[in-house]
Length: 167
Image: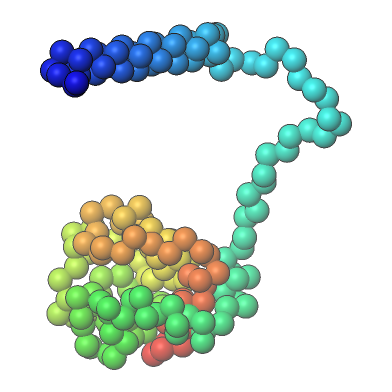
């Protein structure tokens, strides 16, 4: 018959076996990883050298010249949640009618963050590309909540589309 003492002995035996198993696993890990992950002691020559990938610099002007405004129109759907294309119709963000070439923080009646209000110059395609890539890096302290558009071709297409609107 199963009584409390028998149950206690079985549970204690299982716990003890588990403890021995875990200690054995820990000891095996320590023995296997002796010396850390230093330099390899023996390297097999394969005849090929490891080559680091070269990051190819892409000229933004060339991409912009070959950009497709209709693809940019599809990309603008992300922007349309906060921005409007009609002249003078601000949303959460300022209207983007004629934004390419327009002076920064120049839309009347829109309350820009101090960072953007303090920037000089116009929204050139290169400036827009930098801002669209990462608004927080381009203008630290900006109130724009967009995380950024990483693909340079997408940025070029979007800027080509924005340039075709009211430009």
